[in-house]
Image (cartoon, rainbow, N blue to C red; front, side, top):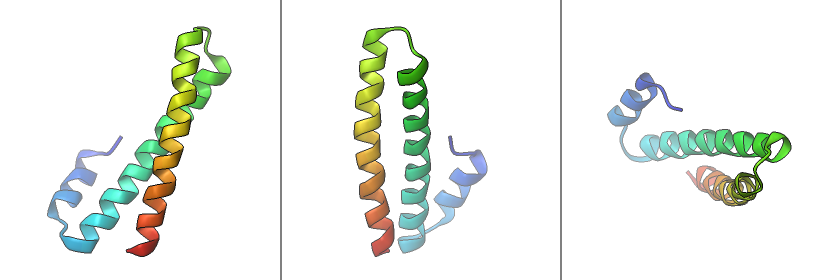
Length: 74
């Protein structure tokens, strides 16, 4: 999660600085989701939740890759 301070910095930024900050924050956010989903896959007991976790790992990992490509272009 982003802190209030992070969000204030994002609000104050403009242009490419905003784009970089936003993309990096989203990368960090999605990586956190992947970690939680991987933990569910490993330690979860509910088959439905484990399937959802599998989907989260796939989709969020793909989004991280896309965001990292965007960051590389900025």
